[in-house]
Length: 212
Ligand SMILES: [Zn+2]
Image (cartoon, rainbow, N blue to C red):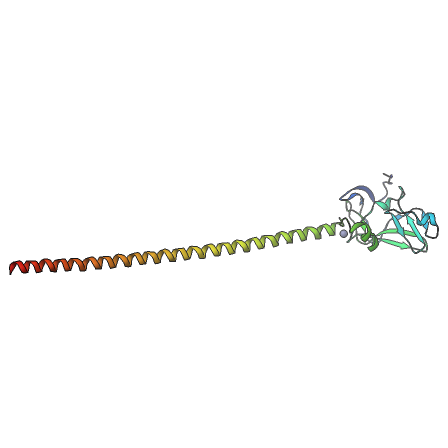
């Protein structure tokens, strides 16, 4: 790793995607933090135009900075969709500075938006890992979880209602069966009473007959 003077308000450190540049001192909004530098490539030269790496910083149609050199500390700055710095491009001077667009506190990772072309080419295929995108992903996952829980609860309510309905129907059928059984017993008792009365009558009749 390239050495950084302790006077500088940043250091290279571990970030969620590998290495990153972190503030070691408060950095005021608007401050130039570090220059993004490297050899200038001329698109009119075949040899220059053939160079391809992730650290190319296009100034205009003609000039591109090849920031892949080791001494270019700014290349450690990661992309963020909601960054705390920006690239301040001076095409005529052929210079790029990374400038704070927010007050940055010590310990905070310094980031800037790499732009749409870089995003589409390098970040979109693997998924942007910046804090804002991670937060969005976490939120989406939480929402999906909540939705699954909601559907599950709905299914459970439905199943409970069905079970309750079934239990009620069974209870009703049981009551009906009991009523029917009671009615049948009543009928049977009535029948028996009638028969015994009849038997008594016969008996009495017999007695009568005997008496006569
Ligand atoms: Zn992002």
